[in-house]
Image (cartoon, rainbow, N blue to C red; front, side, top):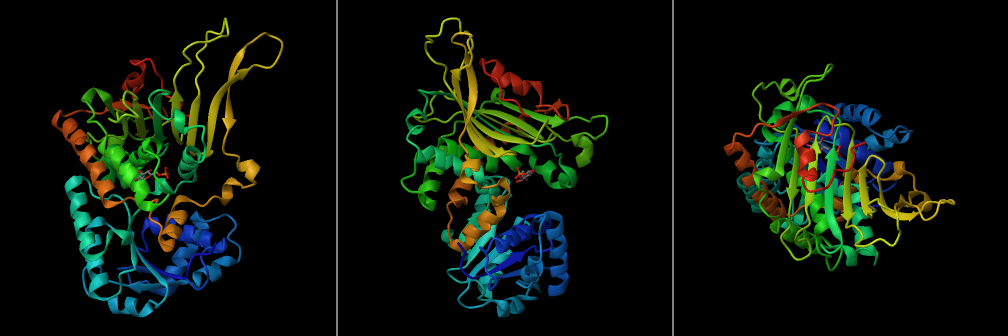
Amino acid sequence: IPVDRFDLVIFGATGDLARRKILPGLFRRFVAGQMTPDSRIIGSARSPLGAEGWRSMIREAIHEFGPAESGDRIDAFLGCLDYVTVDATGDGGWADLKALLREGAVRAFYFSVAPSLFGPLAERLRQHGIAGADSRIVVEKPFGRDLESARALNRTLSEHFGEGQIYRIDHYLGKETVQNLMAVRFGNLLFEPLWNNHYIDHIQITVAETVGVGGRGEYYDKSGAMRDMVQNHLMQLLCLIAMEPPSRFEADAVRDEKLKVIRALRPVPAHHIVRGQYDASDSSPSYREEVGNPRSFTESFIALRVEIANWRWAGVPFYLRTGKKLRARHSEIAVVFKDLGHTIFEGDERRHRNILSIRLQPNEGIDLTVTIKEPGQGGMRLVDVPLDMTFAQALGKEAASVPDAYERLIMDVIRGNQTLFMRGDEVEAAWAWTDPLIAGWEARHDVPKLYDQGSSGPDDALMLLHREGRRWRDIR
Ligand code: BG6
């Protein structure tokens, strides 16, 4: 279904995110017919690039990061693009920008810039009468680096825009399987009765990456895995898996429930946190070499044992881990159900457990491990098999046609749907939980454990589960 005609202004139009994700994503929505040709994307940055200069930059970006088959639609798409040079902290260019915008089109402003520019941009959009009461702004992470800075950002934005106009992106919420998780949880009778501490033994959330910090060393070394991944992406996944059923699938109903989960998180004791840093391998540098800081104590890996203090989850550990330069790119949420209390099958010594596995990437999908009889004559032998609950084949949808997280979220901005965006209080609550953990290891001068590139992280992370008689799912 096409969205309404829009004017989308992208600040930071020559940056990495715009070239890698935002524009290639919009191009795919254009090809899919969701973005109509009377919509416009206005790039904006400090450089005096001009419309033609920006169009050729985006043409290259689409070749590099866009769909393999761009066909002849590129020219039509580029025809929707315009560019204006503005000075985010001065007066230059704002009148030109204003002159480009049309009455009657949905108006959205994407702040793909450093957070220090959020305030100046918001102020100028208002001052020059460019953004009105129904305009929307989109802001990227990092949304602060602690509670204090996040509060300051929220305060600054709220001086110029209402909460209903602010779209804080966490691109994990735009991933196909993350939404499917909600469909499976709340669209079936089967799961909700079992979704509690009576039936669930524990939950694992893994976001493993093979890439290192690459060219982002300067930013990353000041953040680490906790700020870069846990405070936002893993926290959002945790919320969706643990929240109470919202009364409606609607922005505030969902976000109210997520907020309650964050507020119910217990402080995490030091022995439930394992931080790691990747070592050098034969062919590639160590974390410290890569970020150019030989004394860095920043973690490129973290594993935590987290508890939610409420009736549903009391006693159920949530194990979270994420890291760079690990064995495989593998993101999964695994809901591990309890053992059967009693088996009627004599001689079957193995432990059979139902596991609901929600794979975010690669091979997106959801499956449920169930126990059945092994076919054949050998008596009653049991075997565990995955029951595919994705049905991508049954629905006839190829994985390639699933929109990428960014394109889905941008279309939601145009539709005015905030369900998959973080509310200000959620972000603050997440920092309020994160801050003391970071302060704790800083005060202890905790040194991250070294781990081999291509491994599953430091051995201590394995111990986090082993000592409780559990084991991590394989990263493969
Ligand atoms: C970003 C982090 O938010 O998410 C990166 O800053 C990380 O460090 C990335 O690599 C992972 O996203 P995805 O979609 O590739 O899993």
